[in-house]
Length: 316
Image (cartoon, rainbow, N blue to C red; front, top):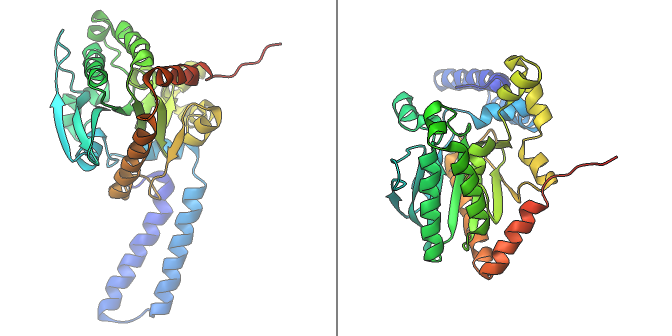
């Protein structure tokens, strides 16, 4: 799949591919000329990816080949044992919880999973958790705190499921209870935004001691389309909304919402997933080493102060 801002790059890559194929049988192009074209391609990529607009980065974040929580768990955890169910209603497949080993360190890993094809997306409810998903996550986090195991949460959701069934089972209460409980949890919590981080759906497992964000992920109170529909009554103004929301990593870093920007391969995590996995794994290991040295009461106080300082306002 070629994204709109990558059209020129794709066309030049295709042209170069054809020329190289022709050159195998008949050397019409010299090696020097081909190198010049490769340099031109490299310069084009550099220019395109250095001038990305907020909506372009949302498109990268939503690329169908972008790695999901399942991919990160499989590639950064040496072992993983999934834990299912909330002990109240049922298991929510939009949230994956389990114990894993990352670089010989035990972690409770909690990830929001969207699915990759039609069947898995339906199974995962497109990454939109129900209340039982948040209760399952909290059950596992409490277990981790009991056994002094650090927690990692991987955020990637368009939002909590907004349907009637979710509301009937207490969607708002489940998210609010998670926020309250995570703020007081006596265990290190490392949050990583790997894709979309929309609304309370993401924040419901997003209260942590340190928050890292992949370069092209986004974190917002609402999706650009939702924002455009409310403010301008026109979902097609999504690009304008994406710019106004200030939801990219650099904006959030400046405002103190996140603590670190995790670099992605040029073009997005889907271009070189192994590089993205290595960057996320490195971030988790570094932060775990720092947080595990902090006494529990100090950890909770630091977490409280971190979120207390968020947000700026002016008075007249």
